[in-house]
Length: 325
Image 1 (cartoon, rainbow, N blue to C red):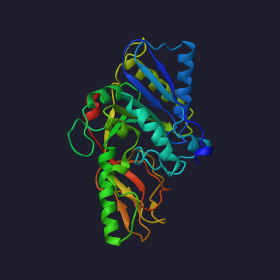
Image 2 (cartoon, rainbow, N blue to C red):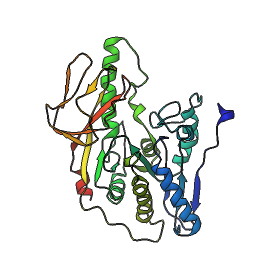
Image 3 (cartoon, rainbow, N blue to C red):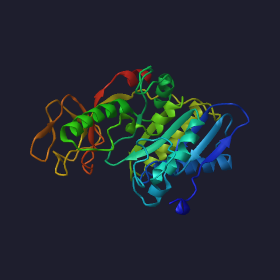
Image 4 (cartoon, rainbow, N blue to C red):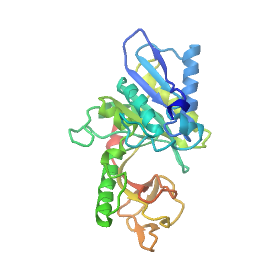
C-alpha cells in the first residue's frame, strides 16, 4: 500500500509573535467536502494578504483522509474518526493517516474539525465534556470550548459524545456475552476521534457540523467559523465575535444500535427531529417496536447502518450551552 499512497498535506503559517497554535481539519470523512473548500479559501486569503496572521501559528489540512476523498466516500478502509491513535503496525489506510495526523495534533493547542452530515438540517457544533477528573475523558478546558462554540455562528450545540458512545459499548458487550459472538467495537475508546484525541493530548477542540453534505451554504458556514476562530483566538487583527444570543443546548444521552438488516425506521427521520416518550421510532426485524424512552431529539439517524453499528442517537435538552452564550 505504501508505494501507492500520496503524501499527506498540511499548510502551516507561523507569526513572529507568540500565540495560540490552531489546527483546522477538512475531509476527515472523504464525502464531507465543505471543510476542504473553506480551508482552501482561507489558505488563499492568507497567501494573498487578505487575511494577515498577527500572532501564533495556524495549520490547515484541506484533506485529512486522501483515499476517502479521492473515492468520494466516508472512509478508505475504515472510519478514521473511530479508535484514532498511532499504531506501530499499520494495516489499514487510516492507520497510516493516524500515524501522520496524531503527532501533528499533539503539536497544537486548539483543533477545529469541519464536517457535514447526511440528512437535511441546520449546522451545529459539538464540544467536549465539562471539566472533570474521571477516567473516560478527563478535561480542564471546558470554558474555552464553550466560549468559542458560542461564537461560531450556529444556534445549536451538543455535548456528551464519548459518554453516550461508552454507554452503547456496554450494551454491545452484554449482547456479545449473551450470544457468544464477537465485534471489533466493544472498546469504549473506539469512540475516540480527532477531538477526543486532541483533548487527551492536553488541548481543546470543537467539531463543527456545517450542514448537509450537498448544502451549497455549508462551505460558507465552515469558512465563517474559521475566520471567527482566528479572531476569537487573537490570531488576526479583528474584533472578538459576539457570542450567539440564543444557543440550543443538547446532550447526547443514548445510542441505539441496528441489530439486523431488516430493522427499520417508522419514518425518514432527520437529525434533531423531536420525539416524546413512547413515540414509535422504528421496529426490529421481528416486529418488536423501538420506542422513545424519554422526551428528546433523534440525532444521526442512519438507515444504512450495518448490524452492530450505531443506528441513531437520542439527546436531551441541557442548560450548559445556553448559559455559555
